[in-house]
Length: 121
Image (cartoon, rainbow, N blue to C red; front, side, top):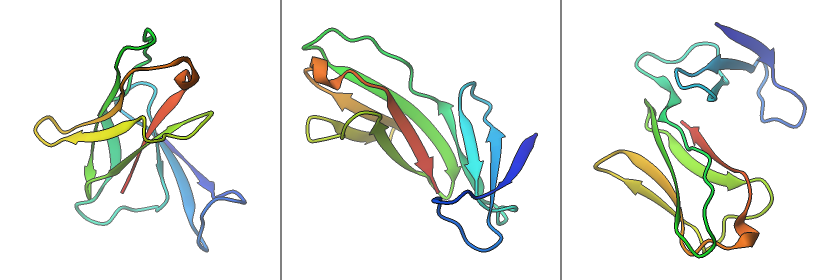
């Protein structure tokens, strides 16, 4: 089941563009599709493994992990709610496991935040 909405002001849109929200097979993941029909053989990005909430002690290493599928291969980006992802963070893709990681070595208090993973194709 999915819902079709017109794009709202301030969102990238084109004449007649739609915004379709679909539920993923993975609980807590929402898929937004901006075309009514996908070209043959193409799929929207979806998570087969979504990042999980972490509580990490200061000075330790934090890893957020996600596995994303889609055709064409989705581009994965990481964002945080209250700050930038700067050079203290490392975004890594493991070609063997297909896992995207946001690595945070030597975590400190100013990195406490909500982090999100976005996939787009």
